[in-house]
Image (cartoon, rainbow, N blue to C red; front, top):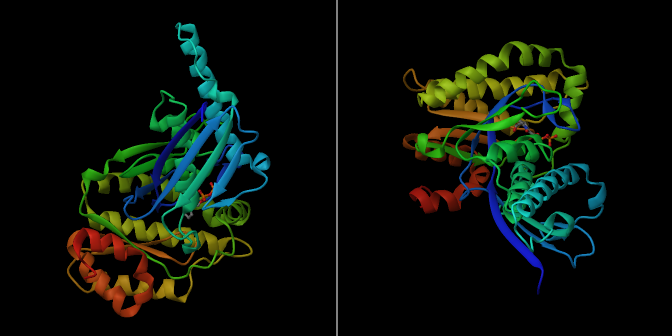
Length: 355
Ligand code: 2P0
């Protein structure tokens, strides 16, 4: 068919080691603290988005995992991402026209058909909004042939979902909170590429695949309004942790990396409990995993061999170096066998660890 342009791209999931929790501006999605994450391998978890644009489309439509979303016009976060990318496309079309190009298709004015899916069960309670919005913005940028950087795109993805800005890069990524009120300096920057620390692996332990009770968006603003501990975390704790974790990554110091990761997960859940009324994301199995990893780390010499972290749900992500992964898988497989199913394919392909 004439006049249809199409692009497909994929984007990875990221898991924070210094957590984002709280907004100072809820419409621009500006956080109350900086955060830092590790981007997972796309062999593990990813979103895939195909976008078509045509002057013949009557409306902009969106399908998530094969099901059409209604009310696209009222989806403010989606509309913010579309508005920002269309504006950049318009500027690009104008600049091409000024420099003498003819027959530039006015893609900025046409409707879109957007299909997005995850290669992991959305019900697994893993961060699908991060990879989903990163993928949406990246696919649009490619479709519109926008000549801009990943950091520029991260400021747009941030307006879809805060954590999405960090999925614009692989490797180790900081979301610098910025100072400005217009969000112009609240963006993601890559601290190191994935090749910097190839020994680092992530194990995903699905404790429950039920949808969480309190959404992150809702939960974090209750915390901002009611938690005194959050004020201490924002002003006194996170700035030092951001410095420390960057240093640990730079020097591939697993002990330091692990300690900051576990402490920050603990404090994030502490501010959830300090919220009034309290928010509980971890369950008994989550806490049993913490005890297991703590005992495992204390069983050997001075160093740590594994670091747990938990997001806004009961599922654990364990960071460890390759040399210890097999031992950790055996340990978890012994005590919590069903939690490891999601990793089977990945580690079978990569290391034969499940064979
Ligand atoms: C993080 N989380 O840093 C933290 C840790 C959950 C716990 O980012 O409202 O889905 O869309 O900006 O990005 C989850 O928050 O919230 C999150 P919105 P988002 O990964």
